Structures are given as structure tokens and as C-alpha cells.
Length: 232
Image: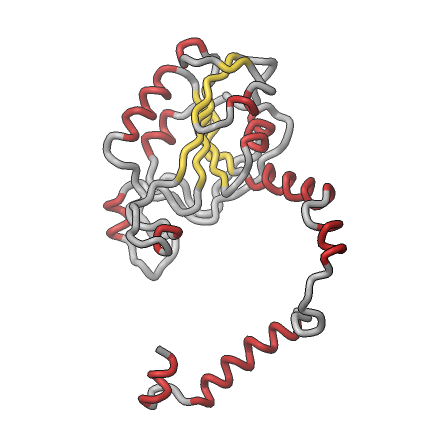
């Protein structure tokens, strides 16, 4: 496309040179041209090193964003846990995992951000479309929330429409790639969640469609505003 724009005269070669110069300047500033090759021995010492892993795990815990908490966390002792979307093996280190929510003290549920499937292999890596859950999915989730006090954790790779879930969950937490262990450490008071929402969570698809596409955080009566988060 750029070649065609230059050939047609809509973009000058000088303008392309200017952009290339800016990009190269950043690469030189970062030192990418000084020694572009990896030292395999040094890489073995540093990649996955315990110190770096510990810092990453601590960042996961801090990044968790508590949106609501109606007295559920911190959990205490070894309660009977019903889990969905969480490794039962991980959960067993915190409580007694049960197969039926009726037998649970609390439940812990992890959800993915709603999206619509896109055609093609490359496009399938990028989630888009409606941020609302499919019509029948919330019914099953809400049945669980009615049956047992539930901590719901939603992975927010993009904004989601979930007002009913927010209203009924005993606690609602947002994550951006945290592990099951990080979530349960926060739920059981072994770590602090300090995250804040990087975008607002709209109340409905109608509010999304009525907002201005070029203005961030522009939906009417959002469920949670930009920057929302409770300390836990």
C-alpha cells in the first residue's frame, strides 16, 4: 500500500524517509544495533530466573482488580470450594474441592471476556465483536450465583457487558492474565489486589452503540468507570 501511495504521488519518499528515521532512532537508542545476537549461556541464566519469576508473580497479584466485594474475601480456613474455570489441583491447596455447588461454602468462577469468532487463522487471534455474553450463557452463571456465594473473576482482555453478574456475585474481580494461584492468594488474604480498571465497563450493548467510537469511556451510566478498583 505504501509503495502504491508513493507511486501515485500521494505520499512523498521524503515522508517515508522521515518515518523510517524515527523508527531507526528508537532502535539505536535501545541499543539493538550494538549487539543484536543473544548469548546462549547468558540466556540460560536469565530466562525464567527465580528472581524474575517472583517479580512477575507479585505483579499478577497486584494487578487483580476488585470491582465488588460483599463480604466474601478474604476467605478463611479450608472451606468447601466449588470451582469452575480453575484447576481443581490448584484449588485443593486452599480448600476441599467439591463436585456440587450445593455442598460448597463459596464457589470460585473464572470467565473469559465475551467475543465473536472471526474467520481466518490470523484474525482468530484477535477478539472483537459484541462484548456481551451470548443470550443463554448468563442464565447458567446466574443460577450458580443464586445457589452459592460466588467469587467471579473475569479475564478482561477487552471490556465486557456484565451488569447482572456484577449485581449478583458475592465478589467480582477482573484479571488481565493472572494465574489461578494469584487469584486464590488474593481471595484468601495471602496477597493484596491493587489494580484499577484500564477502561470502563458498559451497562449494555445499547449504551456501547450509542457512544462515540472515537471517545474513550463514553458510555452512559457505566457499571464501573475507568479507574475503578477496591483495595483488598
